[in-house]
Image (tube, rainbow, N blue to C red):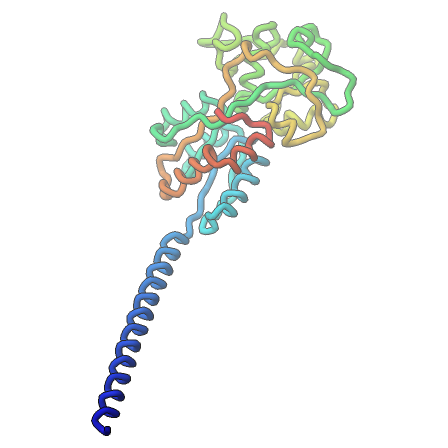
Length: 301
């Protein structure tokens, strides 16, 4: 009888040991798995700060884009104070040694300059958006269906961007077709799409009479129309969404200026290439991003 009891106790003890080892093994495996998960999370959450240089007209949309990007599973990413300037100014900043990870320009010409000067990696260049050039007036103004010829006839005062502002270059190209803008240098004798919209001059009499005003950014140009300082401002469709206070009174014929395209590229000095490329890809491919761009008046290229 005692022998049977001892055998029974031995069996119970053996089963207990097996269970204990099994529990230890599961616990060990769980701990290992948890450690792996924690390691993966740590690797994924490696903090990175991105510096974006973007054309002025992208400011409102880019603010929403960056916020949405962080909320969409990229909470390890922060964006340094994004620089919104005219495309020419952004190139000047890069040329002077300012650091950026990503450059988004408002014209192919400005990005061509960035590539030729070695500011960006040309192999990463991609056309991101398209836009339209429109004529706007102060909201509530009693005018509509304004044409380039109306401006050439001196019916309205206008504001356009200067040589550093792509929207101003496009406006100059269009206004050259009706004699308001005179190309110079290599552009002399040409008009419309065939000129750069830089280096020329506006009709002397119109400038003297205050019919033509220049400013240093498309935002400032739009403000002249908002305040009523001028009758008409030449801006992008997206600026109507961005600033408000203005109404479209005419669309500039697309065949009078070069196509309005916004190229983006990673800079040559970028130290966060992988993270920057991931952000750039998300900007173009995410449904959330596409909706934001469209809500702000941009059409994906």
